[in-house]
Length: 256
Image (tube, rainbow, N blue to C red; front, top):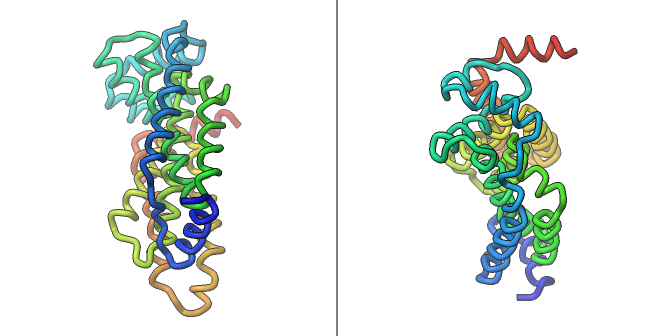
């Protein structure tokens, strides 16, 4: 299948509301190869000495019980979902530099197939290949993949949320499962780091422009189902942050 044919199929697919690209055997082999090479490039630095911020995270957050991690906000070093993931890693493998960084590496590597699929949704295989290579063999990719913080978790959540957003806006009738999946991924990204909220805001702006024409024609059901996904993401985010919401607001106010 040529790139031109693939691009035409995707353009037609979006116009007739068929968001899922067809994956070929070559897609799987290519992505797997990039994931393996990116992992091999990161592994030598996985057990290097912890940086200052990483050490603070270990001392003040990761050694706490899981229920303390989600109910006590001690500062910006607690990227809550990442802290839970790293706490679980420590419980399995013991406390070491590589075990507290392991979730960051896994989130980074999983971002590669997510990005490839997202590019297929919107473009063609050439764009997907280039984007995946540029990400997987980027200096900053390795930098953050070896940083025991939540940044690669936000990257993965952002990419997956964008994949699901395309599916939501492209589906003739988005299923409840799809709407909940989108809301959950956005909420987990924001729970990892508050900058994840920006993703939902950007999707909300896109929804406004996408929904203007249907709404002007009196077509309400589909745009409202799409908006329900955005509302669900906001509700889940507030629910996840509810145990620490007061201390979080106080911390933000204090930093100002």
